[in-house]
Image 1 (spheres, rainbow, N blue to C red):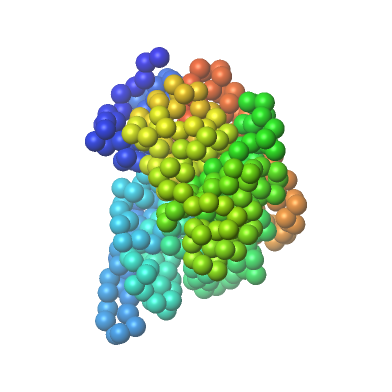
Image 2: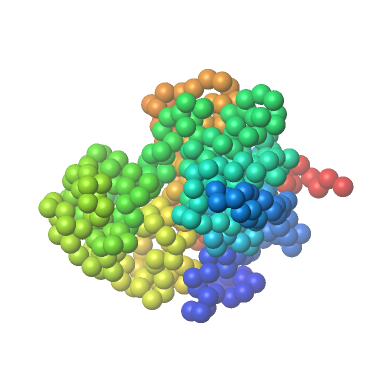
Length: 427
């Protein structure tokens, strides 16, 4: 079946460029939806972009200037939603691309947000808490006309956390002269955070995996699972899936891998890592080469750490039936072609890891209501949205005879484009 040639064709030389990967998938989805050039331009182009320069007096008395960005990709379906990252390699192009991904992710799970993203060029490892607070508060003050519960709702991302979100909320509230908890999500519980938020991304991965197992006729208790990454997403998915009866046979981390064909005791492994700093040397399993752990035979593989771990160079070695993308961009477009030949059932990242932004939406709703839900209600509503979204993507794939990833992009583009058509072009 023919596909639209992306603006820059994907090749072996550039296949690990995540922005080109997103463009290629956008192009194919847009072509299959038969979107006209004008709509494609609207969907590609960020609504607003802001660059700010942040002067900060460091602990030693020196004054340094840090550069920050905030991009709102789309406001067609609601306020922009997306994290703020602090890293030395943040670029405006990166923030643009991440903001567009947030647009598609929110649309796939049908929550009333557009996509946004922010970033500050700095190395948090070289900064004190006081310096980080100064950067966070000044960055918030500089973008304050951009953000707000009805405009743009930030959240934590790479190298940011709930403490920093509390600083964002407090700074915004001081300028507004009243407390505005709904300006940001991922906050501490005491400041309007939501129950179930820390587990949400990993829980969402488990939910869509359970749905995929139903499609393939595999019982969860018979499913062997390999998880790459043992942090917030991978570690939480492992704990929840083990408790639900899955057999977690291997965990792969940056410093090694541990394997037990009968299933790992995840709680004991987490305790071991807390005590030793590593998953290796765990008495409940055997150490193995991390480069081999990803390619063990299994029913479910969950890459939940970094991007570009499955490429054209290793996709033929993947031996899973279901690939659930807990991380953003773990699979390259060229690898997708190989996985399709192997009949791997892929749950794409913009669906698989959308549990986090879904519960962030719940947090925003609760803050605006001033009424907070118990964890059972949060998890029940998350289950409804993840199930409905999974079913919609699979049905789109069946109806349009495309793989699940392109189906997810098509569903997202269709929903955003429809909102734009209904609203019209204001001039």
